[in-house]
Length: 140
Image 1 (spheres, rainbow, N blue to C red):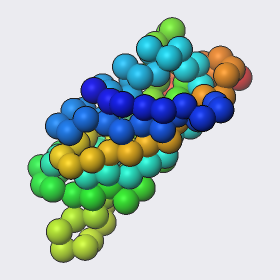
Image 2: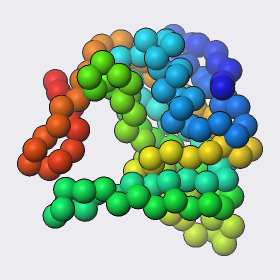
Image 3: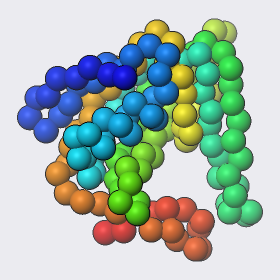
Image 4: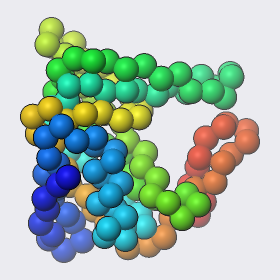
């Protein structure tokens, strides 16, 4: 699913072509016992599903874009919820007409390359559901 090198508390990852970014990154965090951290990077995808929170309804609306796009910015954090890896990732994706779409990433399929930096913060950070917003917020 990926290859990597480590430098200090930072991992340099290259995801395999045609894998799910979320599946590969979740597996990496699980295998390296990353309890909290940050992730950033770039890549290319053949499809991406974004998730938008409608705050009035406290419900998510998902939309999938099945097209080749460049991920010009991947930015997110890593924590745990109920003992499981919890990824919170946002991306900006550039389309063939050079317009951009983006937001909260539910998942995407790599088509070309995906290069990430994962910083392991080395401290446990959990999540809890906040009933007022409907969001899984940090539990510090």
